[in-house]
Amino acid sequence: MKTRTLLLLSVGTALLILVAGGVLLFQLTTQETTTEPIPVGEQVSIGDAVVTVLGVEEAAGVLQVSIEVGGVDDPDGVESFRLVTGDRRLEPLAAPADGRCGPLTVAPQRCTIDFDISASTGTSRVLVVRRGEEQATWRLS
Image (cartoon, rainbow, N blue to C red):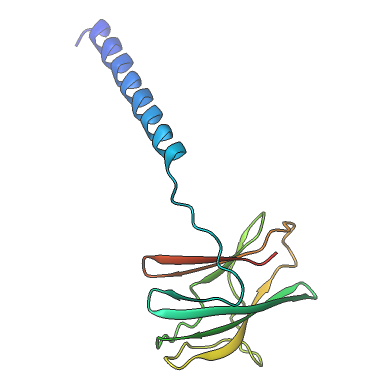
């Protein structure tokens, strides 16, 4: 191929990419799929689980989220829970402790999910639960 043909093809490709990016940007700015956070104390079904956030306490660099959860037998427990702060995404502490959630059961159970927030500098606290294709969020601060 001639150099001129290659240059024209590359310019044409760049223009197509630019137009596609503009269309995507327009779609994102007009999209209204954000969900409102769920109020503390309200029961919600997320996939096959039923979750209620009962309260939150912060002490000694650990954020304890009191929940009631049930509706499904899941030996992985609360691995689908995440805490999003202003600067990072945290997984729950997995070590067994008194009152800490373990495996999920069909029968509702009250327990706590603990997050180590000592290294986090963000002040925002959002609990995110994802089960299957569904997701729920609670604004904790």
